[in-house]
Length: 348
Image (cartoon, rainbow, N blue to C red; front, side):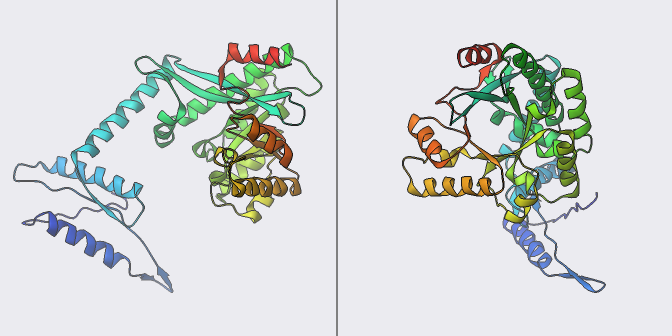
């Protein structure tokens, strides 16, 4: 179906199947001539080997699982099926179903990690972070379920849940803790969400429902996604800016930055990845990298926030380098709404 093809090899053994797979990949490395153009293609192959009692449907299923494993390892290779692949596929399916049930049963909760001004020490806002109260496994971090959520599209309802709850909560906190500058909330937006043309209108509806001002919302986009020049992503980013929300470039320095692309992005805040914050005070190289990031951001009129700040020394180094904001365990861990409110009350 589509661009998938099946090769059936009879009267052979594993080494023969591998030999055929390697020949197919080798032949496909040569360019194809289409009209006046040369086109290069790659293929990912999955190999399943059956005995005399193997059922055709099972062979196809196993080859399919192996093919997807080959894709994960990088295009242009092959994988041989092993039973662990089937076990992983079943575990993934089970997790997907549990996420669906968790959404229906309201098992997901938003926690909040404060962001602090390094100049004044004041709390300027919070980042909204999703947690899952799994009925059997306890409190789960996003790393344990976000990957499957992205692959299956469940990240869309999860992202909608976080945005709505975070905006509702921030509106309450702004009323409780008024100040010269209202508190702001940062919400992560996934690649799957950004590819949806309805995202800007959905954000607009949430702002209208909660009564939160657009400038109080910062939407965080990872560097790798923001650097993608896909038309729909660029269009969505422009729509969000017209709406009045702010944009954060997350994980800066970890991916493959294009300065030309960065210059054209409507970014308000640049987040320095925790891998660089962790080395401050220990690694002269990390210090120079962070200093360069801050100088670049300042030249582009973009504010900076460092994540993963865990010690007073790291906070002091960032302050010396001119970083604007910081978040991390040195200040506070991600907190449930009630505990976050108590933190805000103590640090007004």
